[in-house]
Image (tube, rainbow, N blue to C red; front, side, top):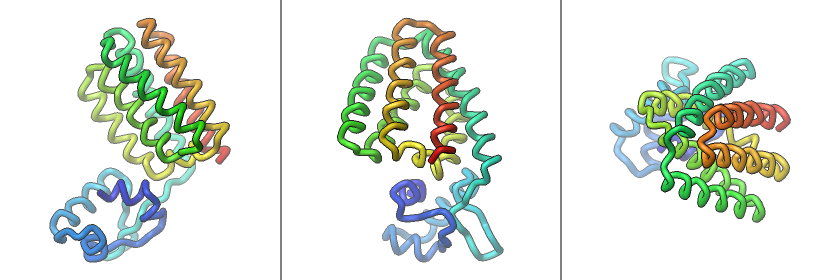
Length: 198
C-alpha cells in the first residue's frame, strides 16, 4: 500500500508521514498501517529521521550504484537459469508483455510501460525456478522502487530499454543461457546509466 503511494507520486522523497495521516488517507485502521510502515522501513522505502518522524527515504548515488550492482548480479543469474528451463507458456507471456510495452512506449504511456517492465522482469525471475533467488531479487527491487522509474520517463530511454528486452527474450527463446545472462547484465547496467542521465 505504501509502495503504491510512492510509485503513484502521492508520497515523494522527503515527505513526512504519520500513522494517523496514512490511516485516514487509506481509510484503514491504524494497526495494519503501523505494520505496513514497519515493513517499508525494513524494505528501505521509509526511514526514521527522529524518534517520532518518519520520511520517505532518499538514496545517495553510492547506494544507487550498489543496488544496481547487486541487481545486475542477481538478475543475470536469474536470466541464465531461466534460459535453461523456460517453458513455452512463459515465452508466450513474455512476448505478450513485450508487445504491450512497445505499444505503451509508442503512446508515451510511461507509467504503463513501467508497470509492464516490472512484470517482464518478475516473469523471468519466476522462470528461473529458484525461489530464494527470486525472493532476494524482490527485496533489492523494492529499494529501487523509489528511483527506478526516473530512468524510464524519456522516449529514447524507453526505446533502448525495449530493444534490450527484445534481445533478452530472443536469448531465452534460443535457450542460450550465456547470452541471456550477458544481455540481462547489460540491461541492468544500462538502466543505471539511464538513471544517471536523467
